[in-house]
Image (cartoon, rainbow, N blue to C red; front, side):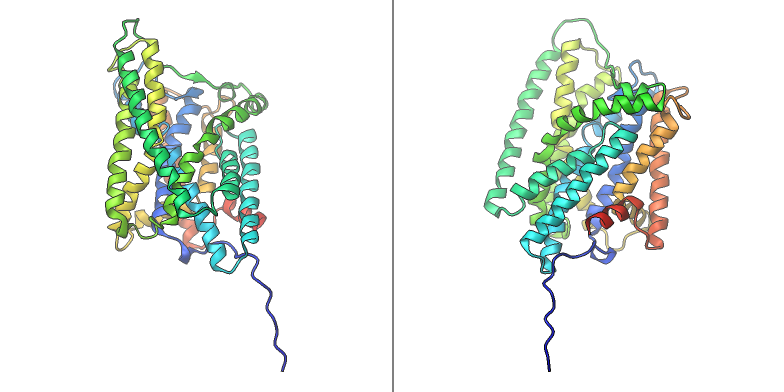
Length: 393
């Protein structure tokens, strides 16, 4: 009798639905709404932060909500979740018996393709792409962070503690600037030529100039990604009920810092606080640096919510289905903004641009939730996820 020797496991295929945790998917699906509110406004106003410069009535409220809860506060959520996902992918491969070299190859290949996806996305649709930056950061993390021990990863907690002190210093400086006596200056949008281009060809050329600078400016969020790596090593979102105390503290502190840090600029954007140009610049910087705390803050809040869910309701399942297809949902949004808001397509920027942008963002998100849920009922993956998995596995 001969014994057949099975080949060593090189890697494991894509994750299946039964292996997924609810919290990460719910977070990704829900936060795509905030991504949509931010990016649709950029398209509508052809600039950033995408707010009405002379708001009236409800426009004041829209500006206030957007600057307090959305701008610079949504993408850090996905940065944390990206780091979390890197650890989940590596752990899954190792659990199947994959060699360290095989795990590294899979991760490097996946992140390399993300860079390619980002380049195509930025060239064809939207300069403000994050996929390419995720790919770059993912390669760095794969090579230098993922295989480190717990003691090394505690460094990131110290970095975030220092960042907290830094935000407090910036806040003190910004509040001092508020007392300056120059003429009142409204919050205005910095123009993005690709979003105002009169033709698709012109927009492509502009995006090819804008994308490299944008990507270089956001690669620094590796510190946010690293926090996700630390959290994933402790499997906080797989079992949020066992980490309620930690999640409560992170939600309170993270959201407290991000909301208070964005509040002064939100008051200026709403037209309820009048300060000079120097103060506007200071408050804008404070809003930006405090926004990164929205990443762990929002995630902790959703973790607490999931810890209390015993049987997921239909809305929770539908939003989670979008979270499982977040790459497709993200790209679907960019296609939607291009079709609905670009000057050379339907250009639906009529009446109040702030209203239009918000309503379109909500409508596109609801449509993507419905589409994702319909796909989940038929066990279909999103088209972008399917393509990426075929390229990687």
